[in-house]
Length: 556
Image (cartoon, rainbow, N blue to C red):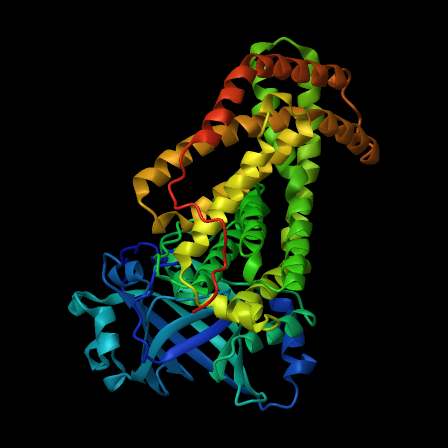
């Protein structure tokens, strides 16, 4: 390996809802990857669910190649040489993998593995047109090693009913960058060896998770190797939801799968930020959960009732666990901060800040416990199984199955119309509404906003942008109103929290809370008239979609 290979850019992530450029007849690798603590590897191999199959152990030496500019990584493509057995001896294979087209949490990629002539990388030897398309335009003469890994692999193949089989690979080893940096590998890969039903991967993962604690690993070894080469061992940055690029003629089922997939990946992408105590990570995780819960409501017409209720309840449990951290983040950063800036000499506000920071610390500890606990992995696996396995088909009556194949546009028109009607109903006579009723309007508008976000790409963009600008401004105003309205409850929670934690309450903190409440109440009174006008103006705004009073239409 060269001493200083150039760092490569991050592998590209396909936009949710966008088509993945993979040939339908290309050989496919479908696998689910999970991280495991090294001390649990032996117990994992002895799991009862793995009993009976013959185990094979071998050592793998892998070297990954790219151009100095990282052209393959940018395409989400990986190219490696693999040698089995002692280094310098044994069979050498070269492997080309396409970008991931994962649905739930499992990854599906095109994969070609062929002998390496004389043990050297010869990418021209991949003769499949689909493989050649992945390398098209890359100057293959400039390929050089970027990183390597050495793995001791323990494998068993489990034959299952109905022509299904899963290969279980338990890997332990290390990835090395050219500058000597290393990252340990300890994971289990579950790959479909026969059949197409991905639910068996999740069923096996859940069974193994009950033997030893596992965590989903959404990144491939190649992605982690590129990150190591760039000096990015872990990413604890908050991640916002990406766009969903649906087409008007896509089916309702494709949209349901795409929306659920996007929300699921949005959740997983913010795990590291939550564990690092990043307030933005907690916020984005809660947004992902709310978006998925809203999606279950928006697609209610085609979902079995019991399924939707069960999944929403499980997601609410996670939202409740991370909720206090978010509430105290908002309190400190958006409610207390402007008052403290306006009254810098007020000691009671300093006392309130100390008390609230303690509550925030305990809230973030609870959020970390929720995301790092076994229940979180079980939730992700359950949701992944539901998406990958299209489990909404299991209990659906015949007419709902037919509706799944209907075009998306009329469905989206009906969903947006229904959400707009609900918001308009809740916003009627807004000036006379009390705080709970205004909160109900805020929730209705939030669901409308999520529906717009999900379906926006199938409509003319000028109208969508104009509508979203007004909706976003109204949400901001109602959100702040709600934060102020719930301050009394927060103060009560803080008093109880301090007592339960046996915390020493800073003198005067409750007087500071009264100052914050009074300050914001005065400012909200000044802005009340403008907020009322904004609500009325938004309700009178023309929709960018074609209003539809009914869906589903009878399938033809």
